[in-house]
Length: 338
Image (tube, rainbow, N blue to C red; front, side, top):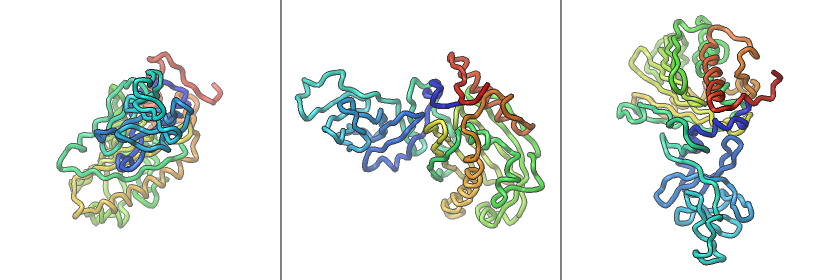
């Protein structure tokens, strides 16, 4: 599936940039092949629009924010959060035509990020209960592009057979090439899964968990929010709950911006944010090394790849996306031979 060729994917919310990067100037981003500009309006809320002035097509993200409007660096035209031109230095306000406008997109803040939807939203931004739970703290982990498809990232998060082989330096256990248990069910906008997996604990993780055991069992609760966001809750025997939220924001067909943050029911004094990030970062870099070797044109037709028992979550993901396309009158756009 070529994500930029499926219009329905424009109708979902994506966390395109950390709010901390919008403090001083506008920023550019490419979402599903669409170049956009993101800035803060006069009330401090994030706003998003096409990154192109309607006058002479200059890139607005190279401009500045003036009185909450994005100002073009070429001739100083300004646009508000709805895309309307509010100021043209070369003419009076009364002379500004209603046709002087750019396309604006739905934009809001959640979990420390500016979320953007390019079309009419089909679903809400994924609900992360721990984000408003006072017993949990939110830690921003990383934000970077990967050269792979978002669907591959989602399938990988639910793949409990790969840790033995991919995560050899972090938590993978040679004694547990498959999960001890795995239960999956569908939701309206995704799937949910519960499972248990035997893992190892290297020294850094033993420190983070305040556990001296080299081996333990992870109890997992996972939710996939269509199309490219997942929530992974890991519960440990000592009562620690570590929740990872990962979104593979589709930049283009072959490139995804990976946004990851975690929530933990401990304190900085117990485990520093830097230590928690360091371990999760090591895990994700092992994933990245493998995922960037995979084909980005992920086939929704499961007959185009071979499968095994632990691939059931990914198979359900492909079938639900295929059903989504069908429900909106679309067919899978792919570069592969049928």
